Amino acid sequence: MTCGAEVSGDACARCGRPRVLPIAYLSLIEDLARGIVQAAVRENSFEVFSDEEERRTPLQNAIGRAARELWFWHYPGDGCTEHGQDPADLQRLLLEALDRISVEVFRKDWGYDTPSPGKLIREGHAIARAAILDVPTSEPDYLDRVSAALDAARERQEACGISNDGWEDKHGYIVSGIQDARREIEKLRG
Image (cartoon, rainbow, N blue to C red; front, top):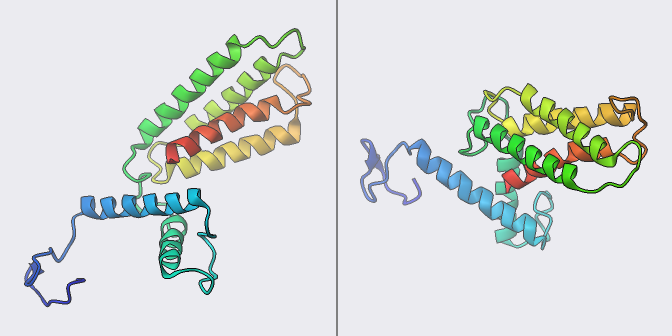
């Protein structure tokens, strides 16, 4: 209790605040705190995740402490489902975004290069699609798991550097297609 009163029964005798707060309220508070941290990161006026509190204002220190709690203390099975977003919806949104980007890539005139950069980028999209579909939507930290799967797919492709048709991907178009999915994840995170 922040009002300083004694708790009697199920609520504070002074202010009426419930002893046990509903999960919807706690989720709202977490979302608001995330918004504050994200705004501080975008503002880029201080190092949000730094432990060096001596050089910062009390407000910046409070934001930094909130940022470290919100960003680093989640663990598999903690019940967090990307802060109110259903993993199945996140998966659908990612796949729709990849489809949209693939159509844009297909429509672009890439000239007569062999192999076609557009074909290689779409191959990267196919790799990303497979990585996205491989992550179960039952995972509580779905976007983190998809990000890890995309990173692994990118590393495999960088190590190989060859397309499905045996073309050498000298300019990294396939990896670029995989990275399109990573950018879409960042958009979903806000």
